[in-house]
Length: 177
Image 1 (spheres, rainbow, N blue to C red):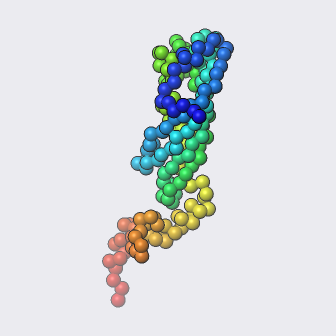
Image 2 (cartoon, helix red, strand yellow):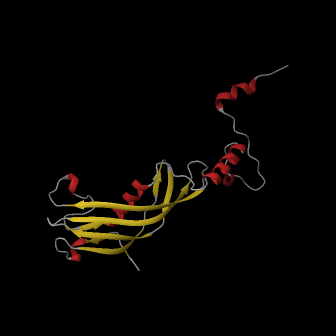
Image 3 (cartoon, helix red, strand yellow):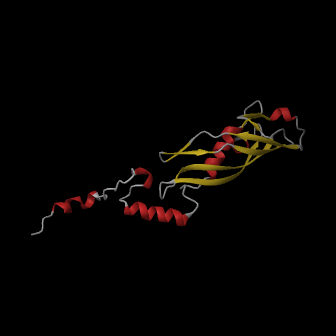
């Protein structure tokens, strides 16, 4: 079983230059917000590959898979998106911005939780939607027939009022003799 952690001390591995080690860890994600919608990600077991570089830095690889839960951007019903993550970082002290990881501090402590969360956000599609596009399209059609109201918004036996586009509202005032 993987150890749950937010940080990991790379120095405790005592790696010599050229050596590497694989570490199994577990991480929990804080809720994510995209465009005012809240999403949650399941806790995940991850594999951290750590290699000591010849110039005293680290090469790091993070691999995990998690499910992200939240509203579909098309039909607004609950959606679950399975997201694999494979991220790399290099941390070489004095190597400049390109070779310094923001997740490794001066004492060789890796912020696993921050790296996993950032990698998840970067791996997600720009618009989170139901993986089953056919079922999602059916829900969209049904929602349009109900005047834009989702099925979860209706009480038992309620019929939605048809939505009136404000651009056409003045036409309802016309009287025909």
